[in-house]
Image (cartoon, rainbow, N blue to C red; front, side, top):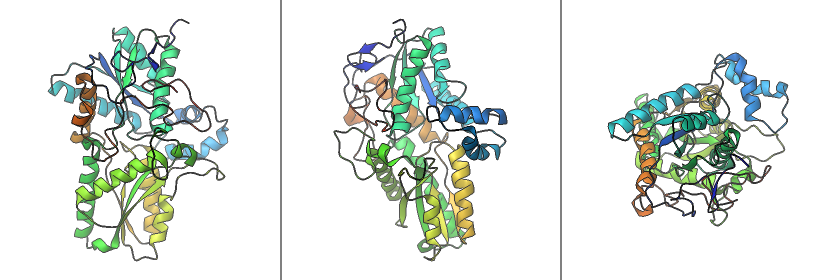
Length: 390
């Protein structure tokens, strides 16, 4: 049909270099533009429920239940900070590219709110761009943090009828790229030093690396089936590995653990645990005086950080007589911005895997997702770019 997505050697919408589905693409590719792919968020009270309908589409959740989540946004005037954060990140990327003399425009589109990915692809077509490199604002492997973005690109190609005109690749998952890890190391060192300066002994501090909980069934399906991971699939394994790097590079042996937040499924559905608030409550009988919360699963201070950590988790700590310090997300930290540009240049230059930086033994992750990677247990497989079918 007109506008159908071109299937290059089994890889939907791929450039010639990626069409054969190699784990790491080592053929240089002359891209025309970068597409920054975000989650999206409401920018006013009237946007909140329509936005949440977009987020939960296909799940049949009534508006009265959505309103239970909407109060998080309404607390902040109905405005999620995520769109403005992506505007700032887009500008930072443009500045970094310009400083290196790299002529790659940055387009921006979201999954769940204006501007949508279909708008970014339409803009690309109008400006004569045909080879795009996707940069999703998510670092880890799971359905919602990787495969769904790949499905979103495929859906946008169908919606715009540009499937035969545009080629789209996607940068690899960057959970262990130095540019992503460095901001967390900086933040943890600073937080510990500040607590010690306030008179808190290191033995009375605990470190919690927090990330978004996901259904256990999705976690077990995260990453390629051909690889074996610890409990929680690639998603949990990657987080634990990065937390170990952050602890080592921060130079501390304060006790730490990986915790989860922001679960939204029914009580009968298993999600990854333990919850950050439950863990903090448990510290009350252990003589803990302060908790450092490291938002390891997030790239910016969006709603899950501002509400679930800065509001709820902080209140839980204070209710139990503890100090809570939340470290910064990467945001526009110079190392993070440089790292994102470096990830694009890996594909521009066809950098061999052995020359790509990775802070854990799990990486560098794949340029082209492997067969069966990150299936959604409820929805199954849908068309997705930048991966070997399915």
